[in-house]
Image 1 (cartoon, helix red, strand yellow):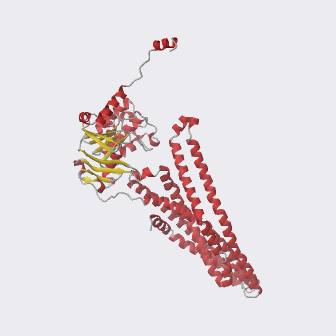
Image 2 (tube, rainbow, N blue to C red; image 1 turned 90 degrees about the vertical axis):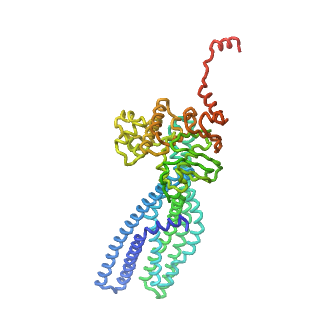
Image 3 (tube, helix red, strand yellow; image 1 turned 180 degrees about the horizontal axis):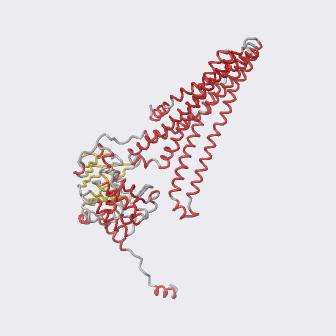
Length: 589
């Protein structure tokens, strides 16, 4: 059984109580119609007594009451199950996503995952609350009608179902087309959602380029594609639905013809003829609905496919925890790594980072520095080789255990849309106000926070849009100081800030890094010259290791990088000699 089939079975199983109520509702819906027709026949034949009529009406009234009660219970139970399932699925998805390696998020776009969590899960709720009860009703009622029809006359029962084979053939013939159209429709929903999210996130860039940008037309085009496939998906259902209705109505026509003949021969009564026509109409309308509701099944299947795509992804093992890794070194042995379906990013990395040391990773963009840092933190698993921290192989450690060891300060900082205090508190959820203030002081951000009208209660805005890059960096460093992890990774923390903020951030990093293992990913080589160890990387391999002085003597690549950096730092545009230029112009040069 696949993950999708397992999930579908679990989800449908939550509607058991509702299904029972639907069965009872159908029963109490059918009984009054049969009794009413029987009473009508007895009335015309003058065979009904007043007391019998009162009993019949009392039974009919009681059936309507019970039908209303069971309809209410069926609807309530279906919605209770649906919303409970919706909440459970979203919780399972969120908790599972937390366990997945970062490689999964590189393979799947944010818009795709958002669509699964919002749109697909919502469709599952709609199926459980509305689709499945309707399908159950449209399936059980024809069965009950057919049984009742057998008691009226077996020949009429067979005439009533004569259109079923043609209906079944039509459904089978169009099933693949329905599924194909809906898959394309679902893909268009995903694409539209991805484009809209990207468009909103990049509004400043789009406005800056004005008429020259193409993102607006691309977003609008995806919306048009969604509209086109939504209409086509519905149009693809209309034609077979018309055919199915025609085939099923032919059964009612046959019941009328055969019933009239049987009545003329005296084999059935007028009451039986009327009852057979009414039951035939109920049968036809209900069976025709089952074909319409096939759309519900397709929507449900496609939605469950999206959910299963996430939940079926294997999460790293959470079997063991670290003992006391804070007392050991980080050792990388014969490490190789490649993203799924891509070429090798890291090849045969061997490295030791002593506890309490300062290590810098340098090299051109794309050489594997950030990937190596991600592997150290357990965001991915090595393709081959090993990483151990304090003697414990990270492959055998839980992600939670690894998370406690690392703090990360990145170039692009994300702040949640809540208060500054809550953003800092992420580093230690049970931190006191005093601890938060102390962390902010060490991060050199306390004075800035207190200058704001609401201080620590100031809302950061979505993704921290209210603050500059340097201010966000220092809030993130306060968060890391509060976490107090033994290993700190600095990923270009000062690369995109002004000189004033850079000074603040360097001081904050000094406060963050006391008595800790510091791993710095840097392009500005002047900032890492005092490191205990500098690791030079190129094309996913280690080209040199050592101090700045050692590498200048032994590693040509590093020496070249330093020389190029110095030339870049000292480069300037020389002021031209305007008089010389004017003289040249006069001579016609």
